[in-house]
Length: 243
Figure 1 (spheres, one colour):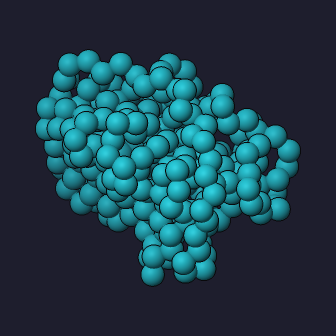
Figure 2 (cartoon, helix red, strand yellow):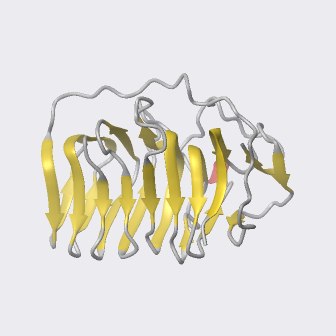
Figure 3 (cartoon, helix red, strand yellow):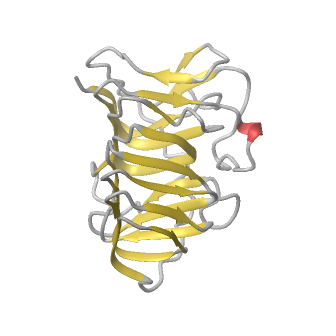
C-alpha cells in the first residue's frame, strides 16, 4: 500500500534541523515506516537550497555506458545517456562529481555501486535514480567542491513529478543530502535504507513509501566530515519532520 508523505512545493526531511512544522521528539534516528495510509500535509516550504548553484556540465566523457558482469572503477565526468550497472557488476566510483545526462543512473541484476565523496548531478531527459531491489548501494557525498554535501542534485529544469526510485534491499549507506526540487522520490525497499549513514537529508517535491520500507533518518552530523548544506542549519536536540 502506498503511503504518500507529501504533495507540495517542497518537502524537507531532516532530523534536528531548524525549520519544522511538525516534530517527533526523540534523540534516536527517525524510522519512517508504517505511516497511516493517506497521510498528507499541504503546508509549503520555500526550497532551502534554491540559491545553490548547479555544477558545470561539459562535454560527454562516456555515452550510453553499460557495465555488465565485471568489476571496475569509474572516474568523475559527464555520463551522457545515463549509466547502467547490471548482471552482478561491481562498480567503484572515484571521488568527485558525476554528471548523469539524458539517462538514468540505473543499478539492477545483483550489481553494486559504491563510492566515497561522490556527488551526482541529474540533468537532461530522463535523468533519474533507479536502484532496483537486487542491487547494493553504498555512497557518501563530497566534502567540498560544487556538490559538497549533496549526494544527488536534480536539475531545477527537470519536469515536475519525475520519479526517482530506491527499491534496493541493500542501500544502507546514503550519506549526505538528496536534493530533488522537482522530483518524486519513492522508497519501496523491504529492508532498512540509509541506516548506516551518519546522516541523510531529503529535499524533494514529493515522497512516497511503499512495500514496507524502513527509511532511517540518522542525525549524527558531527560523526562525518561530509558537511550539512549551508542553508540547512543544525540546532537543538529535537528530531523534526518538516514540510
